[in-house]
Image 1 (cartoon, helix red, strand yellow):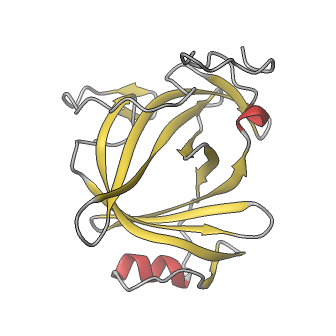
Image 2: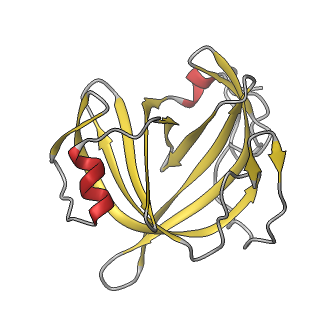
Amino acid sequence: MRRGPDLELIGVSARVPDTITPLQIGVRGMFGGKVFELIGRVRWQWRDEAKLVGGGWSEWLALSADGSAGWLAEAMGRYTMLTGIEPLPDDDIVRRVGAGEPIVADMLVELAGTSYRTIDARTAEVVGSEGELPFAAPAGETVFGVDLANAGGGRASVQRHGDVVTAWRGSAVKLRALQPRGLRRLDGWRQPGWAA
């Protein structure tokens, strides 16, 4: 677990299930004028009402050269780069998530002065994790999250883990736009010319 410049071994986590992704720990890229490196990953999944696995995604911890961090979310070949909102805004969506109130799709909400629509709200659980992370992520750990989007490509997320609420904002991105270097080679997939 990473806490500022310090690393702490907190135990051994479940192995992250193999997924078809060109990303891996050590990939370097550029976002918002900052160079970053992927240093950790959490693999999440959600279940439907019948308790069957409905889907999953990965969140990659992106550490910038200046010491700031963000998350690169990867789901079904789509990517979103998010950074934390500090201080946490006193917006209605933050209050509702913190109170455990129902959230439905297509609600118009404000988060830190920007308008969004809710696109998803669900509980997810950790399937596995690897690398350096700012929190413990043992298999089975759960979080409730609300995903937000707007027409301009803006993305945000408000999450509740126990009694702690966090908020994140950023944008949808194309992998190519991140100028990634060190992508994983996949059998049967010819890397595009822009990938190194």
